[in-house]
Amino acid sequence: MEINADFSRRVAVHAARMPWVPSPMAGVERRMLDRIGDEVARATSIVRYAPGSRFSAHTHGGGEEFLVLDGVFHDEHGDFPAGSYVRNPPTSRHTPGSVPGCVLFVKLWQFDLADRHEVLLDITGTDYTAAADRPGVELLPLFRDDREDVRLERWIRHASISLDAPGGAELLVLDGRFEENDENFEPLSWLRLPAGSALQAKAGPDGCRLWIKTGHLLNVQERSKPG
Image (cartoon, rainbow, N blue to C red; front, side, top):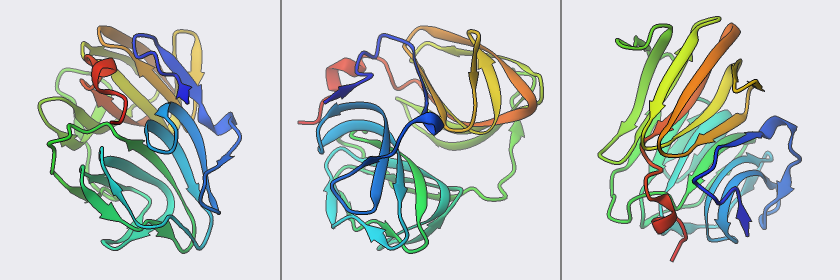
């Protein structure tokens, strides 16, 4: 299966307008944003767990990164409410599920295979800081290494936003809205920009809060398919 698999192209997906697609596990559904592969896949998705649903125990051969958008996610490591950011590196293993139900933004098979850096963050109530060189932008760092920078950004109302992305960028709207290239982005809208891009956007009347990753799309075609 291939969905938005050409990483040299700009892609915009308005996931809130998409139907939910059942996964092989009862009670777990997905909205697929990009994908290369079948059930073992390089994938970016919105995933919804019905109350009481769970996946069987499994190992992440290529790593897993997720942000809890709603509800409470659970595995052997604990409960992760909305606002939790988690990176499970390659070779990590868990049994994921949810008692009350939850919605996640999930990325699979997108780690350096030598990465063993685990991240478990609860960002609820964490302060943002003003971006020194980007007026109208506040930042909350999540993770950074020599190949990617992951963060939340808040854009103030009606702010004109510029973002250079020499290594590419992905943006997921969490709250509010923005406009880019005459297209409106609302909660759960996802935008992927190829390496060498520059974003020019305008925040909506209530501002905007986003998950953003930059720097990770250089030569992505060479390492994208799980082996």
